[in-house]
Length: 199
Image 1 (cartoon, rainbow, N blue to C red):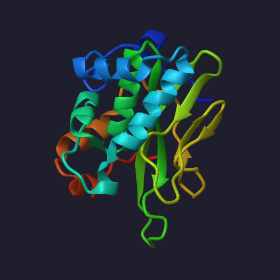
Image 2 (cartoon, rainbow, N blue to C red):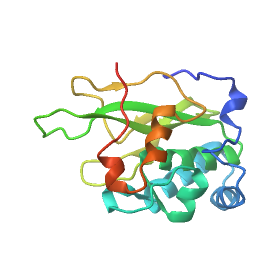
Image 3 (cartoon, rainbow, N blue to C red):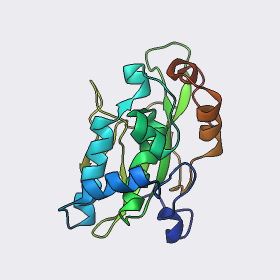
Image 4 (cartoon, rainbow, N blue to C red):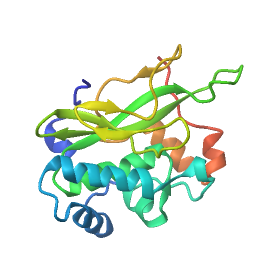
């Protein structure tokens, strides 16, 4: 399993992009947690909400490009990065440690010119299972991410040459991701310039 890169307190704290202290985020977290006793039940409710109710910007060709968790909640859309920010913020608002994980994936496997991009998902620290990765990017044909601890059911398996699960659980988004989200204002402009890292 991936290891955290920061002290546990960092995975509970609000920040500019993971603004778990925003009133709307805190209220949504409380509503999702209502009547649920365990951290696993609260996590599943938050995961399913972000996966299913927040539209993936590229899947739906939807603007604006959102970044902070509160923006994602307000507009109901976001790329994988932004959706993960919202899920992590909802979990932190409920007192559940959570962070960000990244994969480097082939963007268009059927294309002759191989193009890679970063994909973002979340990791949550559950009392019964420890750190566990979940992917709220949104299901579609060929993508079936689920909450099934301790077994991971992620959106994308790492199988092609050059693809990799990047190490570590990050308390804050990677700078290269935030630079791309901040520079581009439309879903298609961002799609043409998705962030990547060199291995």
